Image 1: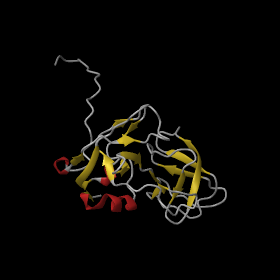
Image 2 (image 1 turned 60 degrees about the horizontal axis):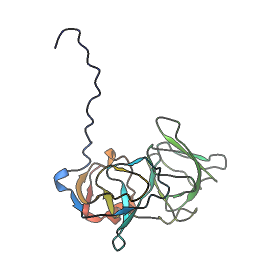
Image 3 (image 1 turned 135 degrees about the horizontal axis):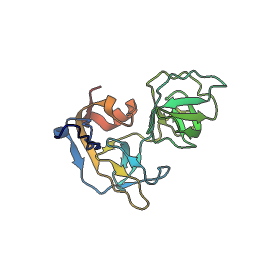
Image 4 (image 1 turned 180 degrees about the horizontal axis):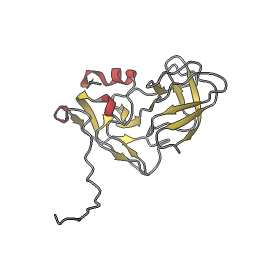
Length: 198
């Protein structure tokens, strides 16, 4: 290379390895994704947890959010900071198995985190790094969907049929590198087909 030559090239994207690839087993398809409350044009990342209906061959995304700053409950504390990229939506109920709240808005303007504004105080303190799940009601005691598979590859959300490939087995999953968090109840639903390291 000649002296003084400067190359301003964007390096080629290399996908992160979340698990030992040779242990991965894909499930035969197709499986139709329910795109309700997903943003058209957005992408579901690799290892998005999903609940698959084995008879109808349909699936819904399992929505979990990771709290990145400790939340202290109180009548005036109506915001929860969560990791970016979650599948949370306005009107969603979030829960911890004991308490819960309704999401009334989501502020995505900060580059480091998203802010969920809730309708009323959560009812309990939430430690940093906790994972909240989408619940069936504002009480937050029952998980709406529990994962039984994850998405194999990044999937674009489009109008019409979206047919992702499912991953039904993976070992040595590096949980800290996943884009979307996996709740402990989802790990039960995924069974021993998935082994999480850290």
